[in-house]
Length: 328
Image (cartoon, rainbow, N blue to C red; front, side, top):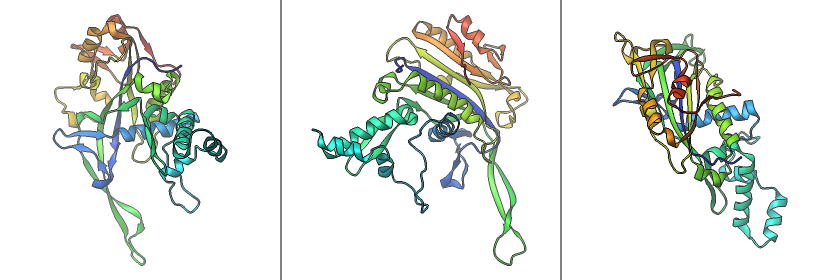
C-alpha cells in the first residue's frame, strides 16, 4: 500500500569508545562542531547503514552500492543505470513511438523503482550517456548531532608490521575516538514525493527495521558498540502538515556532579522529553498515531518526573494512539 500520510521520524543511538563517522579530509577524526563541541554524523552515513542492512539481512536489492569489475575498477554511474536495461527492452522501446535517450530514461526509471528499495526511500540521480534520471527521495534526514558535548581523545599504538624492510620496529599509528556520544537524527517521510517513487508503507517498515537493527548490526572496528536507544514515528492525519524539529524537543539530563562531556554510558543520563510531549499534546488533533521503540537501558523524564523506560504510557496519557514497533 502506497504511503499517503506524512510521517516525522526521530531516531537516537549512542556509541562508546569509538568513531561514529570519520571525516576523510581530517585524518578520519570524528566530525565535531567546534562551536558547540557536539558530534556530527552525516545523513549519508545513516543511509549507508540502512542500505547495507536491508541488502545483507533482508535480501533487498540496493541501487547505491560499490560494484567492482573483474579488473578491480569501479562501476560508473552510467554503467549502474544500464544494469537495469536489458537489450530486449531497449530494442523494443526504440521500435515504439518513443526514441533513443527518452526511451532509455523511462526504462531505467521504471525498473529501478520496481527493484530497489533505497531508490524508493531516498531517491537518487543516475547519469546516462545523454541526460539523467532523478528521483526526489520521500525520506530525508538532517545531519545527526549528539545531544551531549563530546570529548575527542587521541589514542596511539603500534602497527602489526615493520615500517620498512630490515627495520626492527613496528610502525606507529594513532586514531581518534569519542568516549561517548548520544546522537539524534531527525527525518521526514513526504507523502507527496512518495507518489513519484511508489514508496509503500511496507517500505517504510523496512526503513525502521534498518535504522534500529542496521545500527545494532554495524559491527566494524570503528562502529562496534553502537546501540539504538529510541525510535519514534509520528504519522499525521492532515495532508501537507508536520510539527517539525522534533529533535530539538528532547534533551539529555545528567546529575549535577557530571558534565555532559564526562558521560560514559547511557546509565549516566535520562532523556528529557518534556517539550516533545507538550508539542504532541498541542497538535494531538492532527496526529493519526505515534509508534515508538526504546532500549531497556534508556530512561525518560518529563517535567521533573521519572517516566522510567515506558514512554508509550506517557503518550497514551495525552490521548494519542501509541503503539510499539513490532517485527524487529
